[in-house]
Length: 243
Image 1 (cartoon, helix red, strand yellow):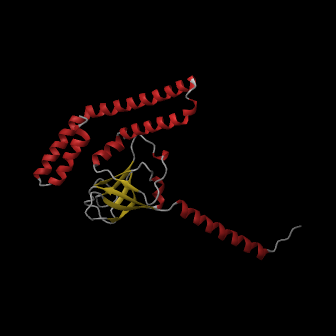
Image 2: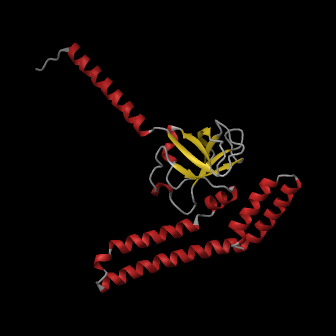
Image 3: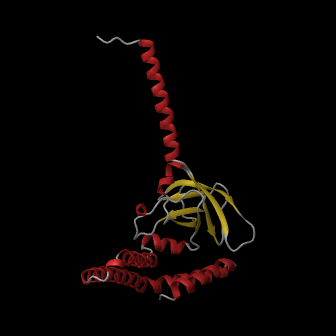
């Protein structure tokens, strides 16, 4: 029969629990650390320290600093809370918006292109610098319709990588045919996606352009010339060429 020294057994058990708790705490801290990111906007008007950063109706962080020196880009430093850091991926989009629900607007909305899977991208590392969207309308189109040009670029890169990976065996007729079939698939898929956005713009473009033109007139009437100029630029650069 085996006998145990009870005080020694209890002491060892307590030590094991302490170590497990300590290492478990370290693991959690490492896994769920907060993120600090810098987002460049052309204009950060209305933002302030502690302005919310929101994703899908939930506040996931806040603004901690805004550089206000005269530059073409205004860096806005944000902190993403540790429990939400997993949601921030390298393909994240950011825009300054009044359409937030968690605090006094404006704030920063985060979102993703509708036609890509955020989880297919790595987490955005702390300290990263990204460019924000200057137009809330562009942000809305990308998150609700899709980032078609970004997807086209992804297809091109995929084809380049594919060709590079089979470069050494392309002298085989079978390999050449397989590569051609795969390339044709990507080209056809890209074409279908372009048709999708063209159909959407053809259907909705004239209507939204008219509304933007009316908005510009209203802003000019109210004396908001700077804001009117931004919409004129958007109409010319982003929409006029497509409609």
